[in-house]
Length: 191
Image (cartoon, rainbow, N blue to C red; front, side, top):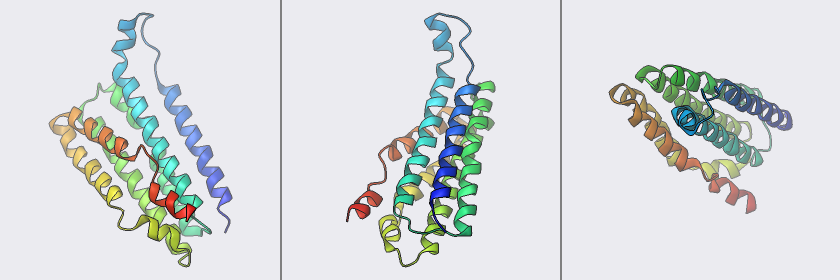
């Protein structure tokens, strides 16, 4: 099965997710800097969510560059990832409307953790679809960064009930860890 349609579909869904996120943002209740400052938390949540969607999309792109063929399992794993990514606008809207209380902030962590699960499932499905293509399997290796990211997302969920800001800091830390594209895959593609 060719990967081109999977890439095109994913690009379209990610573009829609980002569009929905920006359309869900409310305009400040005034034309002053103080009105804009009052909306700073939701602008920050939007920026974090945009970065997270971008990180998943960017790494998805790099992973598919190392992919030669896909199968039905790969398609379903990709849909699983896209489903959880599509919940990002809902999660940030809920956090905003609930003034960043514990449950909405924790739900954001659940969405991020499930995106990480989806990405890992997709990665494994791609590797299983073409065992002769060792580039991706070798590039991924033990994938400590992905495991650490997932652990931080999972830790952030209960910590949101202690102090929501602790969970938000962990979400930012994970995003910062992934801001640079996965060099392991890029180096394998150049080799």
